[in-house]
Length: 370
Image (cartoon, rainbow, N blue to C red; front, top):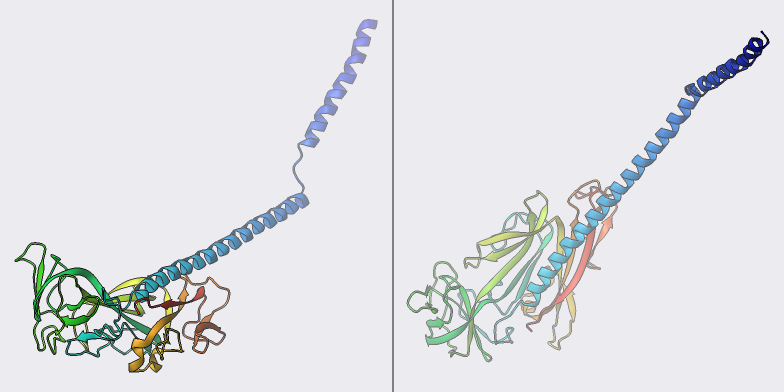
């Protein structure tokens, strides 16, 4: 009996301890209170809001960087292309003095489209209803630039007469081409009436005549200059740079190449060079006294007829904009400051005011073939 009583007394504390442990476990398994849930939810909202704000900020920064990068890339391409074409304007083979002495046999010797003695020519702030060199739809208030040089250069094999030339080339010459023949002492420019590349393999014989041909302008006279096999011959390349609506619906820079010869209504095939160009302006550095230095800068409207062959430098001012809208915080627009030859931000409303990223680029290019 004593032993049983002792065991019973020892078992009771064990049971109590077990119940106490179970009670503790139940208390640890209790849920959160309403206040704890509300505090946790609020903290979660703050964290999500911060993450969304950071994401939005990073997204805006990326869009701005992408817009700036796009306009920079486009500006480099335009400037590099124009620099290359402007610097080579007036090239006429061996004959370096294109300004004076070129025998011009065309019916329209003074035309800025065909006269190699005027390697550059421009139009200032063109009206959108104007037609220039067959080009229509030019953006209102923008400049047009015309450049000329000799291309498709070949060797002259023989000059049988003033109306017949044999060229050491099997292609590249066709009826209506404006052609320049040149050596170190002289140069002649004329239009060919026919080209025969089938009679002699590897050669082309071109002939020319006096009178209005189809296409125009034709020759007023035959060349009096005679050339031997040391001469170079090539076609006259006339390029027209202008702005009009591109494939994406925005204004773009186009390069037109005159493909048929005409003084008043030349037909041109144009290719889109770069989109999203809002405006382009040119200024011309003129050497009026022939000492090799620039005496004045003028826009195309104030360059006289006699001064176009004295242009030594061309300034280019570009206004480019981003492909996407809603890049900047506020609407913005730019106006051209002709006094300082640059585009400046305009705080007043205009038809170009929107939230696109806009950038201005200005450079000057020297003509090399002086």
